Structure formats: structure tokens, C-alpha cells
Image (cartoon, rainbow, N blue to C red; front, top):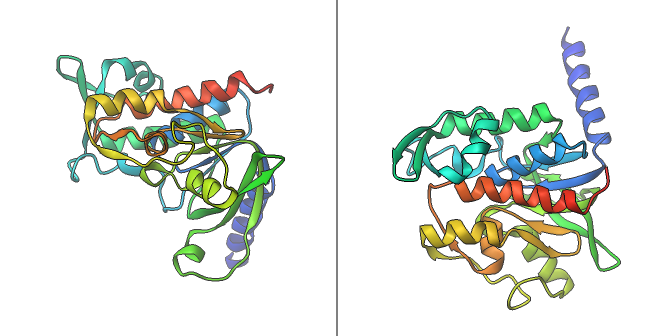
Length: 256
């Protein structure tokens, strides 16, 4: 029995990893925008893998606001909530409240059921850079990076990479720093996130969702971090809409 349990886990995980060494889209960061993007991409038949450095995907959505596990969403994002089966309650004017735990759980569940391969406890050290294009990611275990161990990574090839790493926008920063390239921003560089301004941030989160370099897209808070937008706090309509938008951008350029 002991050997069966161990061999079953090893065989199953190895098959999952091996079948994901080449994908259509690699998503770095399992926050709400990355999960939404992965769902819409996988629904259209693309091979999608999502990499999350923590034990559980979901990003900041789990904790709500200051560990009050409720969040706010505007009416424009309600169709996405309904597609994911997330319950919501009208609060005031254009705003609705929802349970952050139910919302996050549903995003993860529906992404997985759509066919997204989710790899948690992983970190992306670098990108694959070929012919002036981002062509994949350089993968390692999150504890390897945390403990600063000198362990060589593996490579995942991808037709498109999404930076959904949130406030840090790690992938965009790595690409810029290592390759001296000009990004699709007003300065050509990662500008950095500005302070909190909810209405402005909700708008620019979606506006700044785009391809910032051939093969590399940004969504969610990474989009504002790269292009110099504001942060917004525990309102998530823009995050959900950003995830759907980046999926649509990639689908427009991809033949399944």
C-alpha cells in the first residue's frame, strides 16, 4: 500500500508535468486575473498551465480587506461572477459584495475543470528569450528560490506568457533587466505602481492589460505596475475584467 501511494503520486505528477513542457499559454501568478484568463483560454481549447509560488492560488482575493473575507465588485463584472457561479449581494449604487473565500475557490475550481494545469509551489526564475521574443519560462520550485539554493531549473516553452504576478510584476522586470529591451509603456520601462486611487485604478487595470513585448502579456495588478497605474484595494471588478481581456487578446492572435 505504501509503495502504491507513492508511485501513484509520482507517476501522475510526472505525466502532468511532462505533458506541460510545451504549452500555448504559460500564466505566471495564480491571482484572480490569472485564474480568469486561464479559464477563458482553456475553454477555447488552448493548452494552458498556471504557475503559483504559494501553496494555494488566489492571490489577495482570499483575505478580502484586512482579513474581513468580503470583497466588492462593480456591476460591469457581474457576468463573470455568474459564469463562475459566484453568489453576490447588492450593496449600494453600482456595487456588490461577495464572500472572498467562495469567490476564490470558484475561480480555482472552474479553471481546473476547464483543463488548466495548475502547478503550485513553483517560481519563475527567468524567461526564454529567442529571436527578440518571449518564448517560454524558466521554472523552479519556490523553496529553491526562498532558500537561495543553487539548483538548476527546467524550461517550459510557450507561445504566449502572461505576467500575473501582481504588484511586483516580476516577469516584466526580469525581461527588462536582463535583456535591455523596450517595453510597450510610456517610458519603455517598468514604471512602477502608484498609490491607491480606486476609481482610477479600476479603469487602468483593464486599459493597461496588453502585450508589453512580443510574447509577453500583463494582467491584473501587474498591468498597473508595469505601466504606472494606481492600486485599488479590495475591489475586484477590474481584476476579473483584466483576466478576460488578456485571454481575448491572446485568442485573437492564436489559432487553436
